[in-house]
Image (cartoon, rainbow, N blue to C red; front, side, top):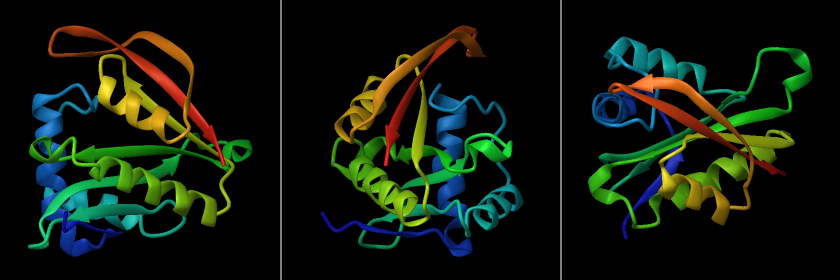
Length: 164
């Protein structure tokens, strides 16, 4: 498998945007309801170029086939050592271990940046993401019942955590 995992750059903005927007319009994996514009995606990349990094998975031709990020968990200072992870893999490339490579890189980056805890908030019916996180040492710490609504359905969120 010729896949590279690297820090996201502005030149990856359109590829990340197209991948993410497919999840926005076709999936409950994100609770976003409106696709991102290119300008919004560039701003997102800029926000993830420092202490809360993002990575991309690129195929042999340099196309974005996955991405992941670390974001602040909450804005209050006492939460500063906790981050939330996000992982997305192109639907046609799922099951190839790309998500695992992205999450492993995010965990390494979180550790290198001095974070203590990583939180994953996963829609309740996303068994693949729950299994991925469990494989990487995350434990379920709670379920938020029917806190989101998309495609006419109430959605639960499973919260998982891993201490570094």
